[in-house]
Picture: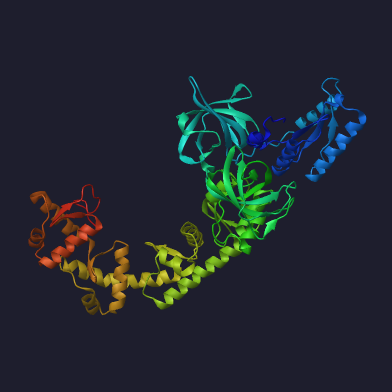
Amino acid sequence: MDVPGHEKLVRTMVAGASGIDIALLLVAADDGVMPQTVEHLTILSLLGVHHGAAVITKADRADAALLAQREQEVRALLAHHGLAHWPVLSVSAHRGDGLDALRALLAEQAATQPGAPDATEGFRMGLDRVFTLDGIGTVVAGSIAAGTVRVGDMLCLAHAPDAHYRVRSLHSHNRSVQEAHAGQRCAVGLAGLERGKVERGQTLCDPAIALATVRLDVWLQVAPTEDKPLRSGLQVHLHAGTQDTLAAVAVLGQGSIAPGEGALAQIVTRQPVHAWQGERFVLRDASATRTVAGGMVLDAQGLARYRQTPERLAYLASQRESTSQARLAGALAAAPFGVHAAQWLRQQGLTGWPFGPADVPGAVFGKGREWAIDSARLASNEAAVLAMLADFHTRLPEDMGPDLARARRLALPRMPPALWDALLDQMAGAGRIARRSGFIHLPEHGAQLREAERVVAQRALPLLLDGRFDPPWVRDIAGTARLPEGQVRSVLARLARGGEVFQVVRDLYYHPQVVQQLADLARGIEAREGQVLAASFRDATGLGRKRAIQILEFFDRIGFLRRVGDTHLLRPGTPLFPPGSKP
């Protein structure tokens, strides 16, 4: 492209060149290679545009010697940027020289049709135009970077994923269409989107892949035109699609990057940007006068800490693979606790798995393929859980087992809670652990506890029922039943967690039938007096004032009553202890 006012319009050139398949680099025979020629070719190479051709125009204005010189200059320029395979043609619009060869080249490239769009790629489009039309409302336009959009789809702006807008209409190349796909220019009419809420530089996308970030881990290629290495701390302009923001560069794994070389780096932006794995970008210097580097996003959610550990660098290197299967395998190798499907797919710009479970050797997918983990990592994590439970049962044989949060702290404290839940689902589904009332235990330990509970329950529950409003304490139950006090205490605590008894205060339990009777008494008092006073409840139950207050506070604690000053009121709409129920 010939871009007047070159430096100010490079931003537009970057937005237009992002995602194209083939480029034509034009060099006028009379002017030769100009500074903007070099920068445009640099940008194309950094954006990964590897297919193209150089066209020397105005051949009628140069003799044979000058044309040969221009061709030599262009070939040297292409070789310097790693594009020596591009053909070089000479044409003249006035005389028609070389036009047939140019037409043949374009026809050949046009005949090379891209493959069918991947149905799992989420739609995303950087916006370069925003306007309103009568009868349609707000319309946004840009080049579709990935995925497919259809009339009726629900989309969002990547920075505000909770607000969804229906696609009312689509226009591509001046005609109305029902769907459009990656590589096309497209105007999208959106129902419900106010003009003031959208602007150039934002991204329209499928809500399933919406993300915003200020840290991009990337593969960074320094432009061969630079005269010194790139070092950490460099302030730059980041151009990604239609986005332009100030940022800082941190080189990872080494001190600097030499001109023409590439390395891992992290880009920290001053404001959130929207980018996905594989997204190409260009960096220009802080004054926006020259292109210094470019590359590809490897991880859109870069780490603020531990970003240069050998494990992290190995993971980032694996994300340069061309297939999503290989990238997932690399991610699993570096993820001791596995990866969440939704999070990993979002960063990849995918709405679903583009491959089957068998396509990633050594990977284990959890329930619903909502998470994935390397088989060796899974075995290690399961062994840690089983060892923790065996030790817990040895130390506390009368306890059912640790609750879920405590178990994670004991076994795998660094494992994210969501992945911990997925691991427990996997182990419970395989019968390696058992879960009960928010606790986990080894299956054989549960069988032992159930037998102990059966013995205690057979002896303790009748005593609680017979005691009615004044049941025996734990120590009295243990003495009457001739059972160890500690065993009775732990079993009644487990029965309380399962709702089989109710603990009013420490070591004092009530039978469910008795609690229902007490609740009926409290409900009746409120119906007569409009409130429940401790004195009224004491008289109705025949208990002492202290015990009556303990029971009322228990009802407050579980949400049956609520305390207001010195009175207790029935909590409106409570589902607890409905009238006439029989526990």
